[in-house]
Image (cartoon, rainbow, N blue to C red; front, side, top):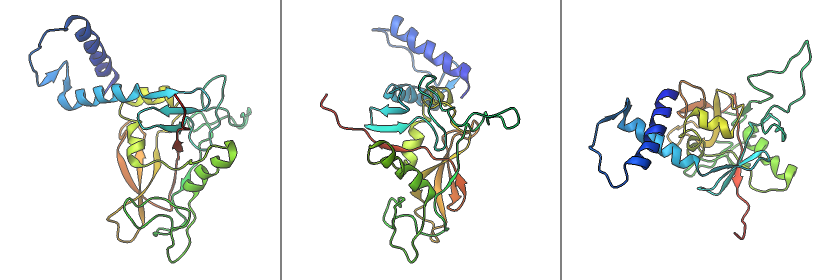
Length: 237
C-alpha cells in the first residue's frame, strides 16, 4: 500500500468524524482506491499504533500487550539526544559509517540445523538448553539475554513472529517513527517451524519494502538481524 493511499484514508477518517455523525453511508466495495482488505489493514494498523509509546530512553512500550521493545536493532547504539540508533563508533574519512546498517549485526538462530536450540513442544521456542542429543548455542537468544545483566531488567528475549508482525501493521512509515534505522531485511523470531521434521529451519519476519511483514523460513545457521523484547515492568497505576 503506497503513501498516497494511506494519506487518503486518514483524510477519509477525519472527514467522516466531522461530517458523518448520525449519518449512514452506503456500503461500497472500494473506497477511494482502497480494497476492503487494504482498508481493514490501515484501520487495524492505525488502532494498534496508538498503543505504541516511545519512552525516549531507547525503548518503546506496547500498551496493548504490556511489552517493552528495544528501539534499536542489536548492534546499533541508541543516541538519547537524537532519539535514534546511530550511536555506534563514528566513522572516519577512510572508513565512514554505514548509513544503512548503522552498526546492526547479524546473529544465527542456532549453531546447528537441528532441534538443539529450541523446545520440542509447540510453539517450538528458543531456549538456552533444549535437552537435545547435543547442546546448541543460539547467538540470537544470547544477544537478548545479555541485556538482562546490562541494565537490570529481566526477561529480554527474541520476539515471536506475531509480536514482530504486530509492528508492521501500521505500515513502514509508522514503524520507522518508533523504530528508526530498522534494517530492510529479515529479523529472527523465536519460533522454529513446527512441521519441519529435521529441525533445520526457523521463522523470520521481513522488514524490507517489497515483503514487509511477511514470514520467511530460514536455515537456523544463517545469520540475520534481531530486535529484543521483554515484559513491561509492573506499575501501580
